[in-house]
Length: 234
Image (tube, rainbow, N blue to C red; front, side, top):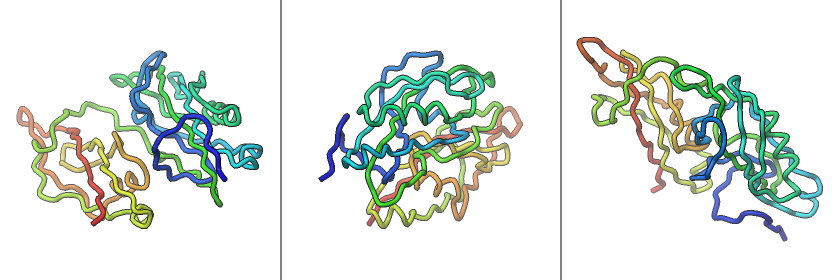
């Protein structure tokens, strides 16, 4: 019989036999620039190894840690918030070894602090996929933020339901920020509240958005707009 130790909650987790980070919700942070996990972009994700002792004892658990990264995106500090002792060392090491793209404020790299959770679940095969895919940071430059209804889009993106999620009976509301260039083309999709495999699906639609250029003072400008893709099973 499996035993769960540590923090308990009703959680849907893709990872089996490994650990994956999960976006935190409302934790009080301390550090240079306090940001949410989804604002951070992974450059090199390191998955903590499932401790042999914990596996042999059929132990599962969640390890919540607070990270501080420097202006280069290197982890400089890892603090355990809540974590069963069996998973603390491997979670700390994985967090220290993971590299991130620098957090930028008005184009200037800054130090940042955020919280993530490594989830340890037993299974037949490990899954190294993080909840946030490895992706480049959002493009630099000035993007004017609009409400999506303010855009004139003649064609909405057609995104197929991920078969992995469909087979598991999983539904999701995938909230993202769309970056559009001056021609009205989506050039980047940033996750606001969207996990895998849904994020990969919305980043590679079979038919993309086609929107009319936004004109300001007689000049077409790049813009960003929030949009939610709903994946509901019928």
